[in-house]
Image (cartoon, rainbow, N blue to C red; front, side, top):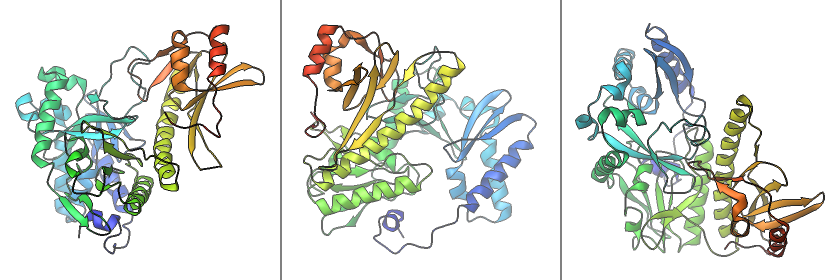
Length: 423
């Protein structure tokens, strides 16, 4: 029975599996690591199904989704042997023991949220980013995974140094490997009321297909309207067209439900392609309920990513005695049409890090706030804002308060929440 059929309600689902087997496996691996004299500081990953530990002084992150899938039906003897082989892949640091000739055939790209795997956003201090990454879609990251027989691990900058290759070379090899599998598991799940497709490959790289150049665009003509995709989890990729509002509404519901239910969710938002075939966030024109639902999913995703980033930044600022205000990414829903509008605040003489929002609330007096579109703030007060290099999701640091003449220009650019629309 197809996994996506069950999730999308196209076939009757079995009773939901208890999470206790996952916890049992986690404890087994923790116990095995604890018995290894070369391992120390074993800790669970806060937002992932996996562990972080030090082996011979080297810090390693271990993700257990594939191991759980592989061992859940095995006998106790075979299960123990599989776990042993899995841990053996991390001897000496795993990827450090793989040559480039071996690695280039095992690399695959994966899509994750902007704050996935980060302890501190890149660019805050002098440290270099660790995981190899690219940023081509807002609030998402493209990472590289080394898909070994008994384990998979994220490629770090240190691995590229050891292999003597550039990021571009590594991504080129990863996408060449993705090209070999990107059509595997693509199935037409529903023909009526309009076509709906899914990837049901059971390889845990279903969502990675969205990164394949031309993959989503290839569904033009196979769906009604422009192709739209959902990747709420790593093992889910569902595609329909925006020409059928009912089917698109089902896709919204699916993305929201599975993102909420998964501890390893990627995004509840929807994605499409631009005129050049590149993957971009899907925004539906109009002010009807469906258009607002699509907008709210993007806002919800952005709010969660900015909240995580804010928590990390504030912790770093406190630890390093840095006095910088990290502005929140706020949102309100307009009563007249349920339209979500995002905002942040900027106060006079307050050194701030501002998220990118629809509008900025500039406090020019005790009770005098100017609600100005962010794009206008950047245009009119260019010298007062500086984008923080490498920070993802993006933020701008205030570099002074606008002059009185600029304040008057900003006052003229104010918007009314009741009539504000996207550019």
